[in-house]
Image (cartoon, rainbow, N blue to C red; front, side):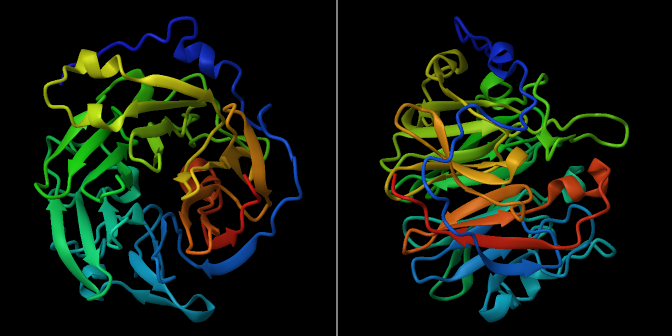
Length: 373
């Protein structure tokens, strides 16, 4: 697929990220008393994604990043008890004896519940954020009433070639279309049609979906780097669709710029890559963010990894801190409960050995009730 240069006019991507050693952001301020952060559950493994059903069922996932995992997808019960979901067979994959990657969870990255009440599971099948297991990249739809997988969508090399890392997914209000982010190299969005199962890479290699090389990821005052000194290169990651399904919003985690594009344009097969690139808009200057969540009231929430916070975007496209707490160590993914509570995972990515940390031993799921928008 051809890659189209992106021209921001008066502000280039490099200018947008200049001096972004993002220990703090000028947009953030405590305009009201911060809501209380409630611990929902603690986990011995490294959690990333969370989903909450309309009936209040909570699901979390554990990717194979640092070590093998006994449970890839779980339902959270009382006192944080984990039950493999939808069953033990789907959670049976093991690093020591890999088999049936098309029929088992290999490295689940995220989960979400669509507007129709289905649970969706995104498996990039790239343990350790590295080599994809052949035949493993896939998207699953689970019927929560039956607790059964209702359909498996396999992604071939045209959608998820080596170097990809399928990261997040959001649905249109009718549940018939979805947009995915690929935070690998090169970054892109993926337009996905539920009925046909057709998926295609869009904005593939476009600057808006790539990491910003001049952005430093700083957490608690420390520069996040690998043992060889290499910085993180996380491309398109955080993703949200507005409540009408008209626009998709995203940013690279190694980036400080929010973009948007009309959802209809992503699915317009007649549109050339150049024409689609022309539809991309710069929305706001942000901060290092991993997760996006568009609440039912139309308020966009972003996790702020550098200062252990969740922030919301105001109508003037500035940001205000909703909750900040040292326990939110690398706030990762979010979901919304029936009462409007925001659930957020703390995945402790800077503690990973790959980032010169001691190793991740415990992670958490929290929730809070947002203040009035």
